[in-house]
View 1 (tube, rainbow, N blue to C red):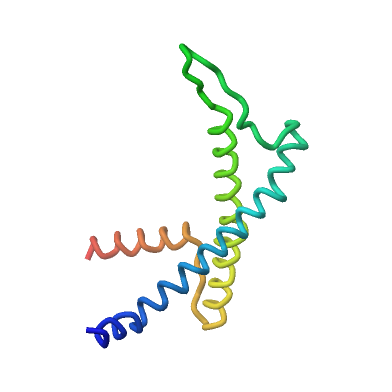
View 2: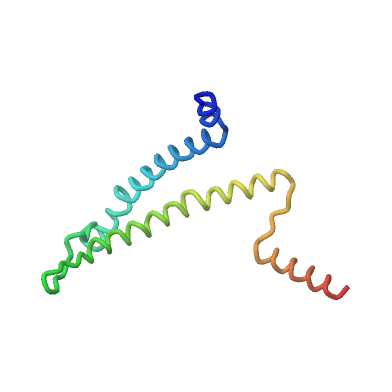
Length: 126
């Protein structure tokens, strides 16, 4: 039973998943630091404060903390933007360069769709 457990833990997928999880946590901390320490101060410069969590209103003794939602929404937008501009776009550029280096033709999406449409029309005529 211990041998089976050891074999299970040493499978490539489990180890790769564990490494990916640890890297994901570390990367998440890095992105959160970028947003909290570099982007939210820009919000503070423009609006006057980086955190709206104390903004509330009360109806029948129920406190609605709309400021917390507003702050979390701003942080979410900044996190998504940081991931898009600092990870997704650079990785796409690296992948395009790698493909070009392999001699594979890099075709913009719109041109590729046009070529596929023309090919489909020609196939339907045949």
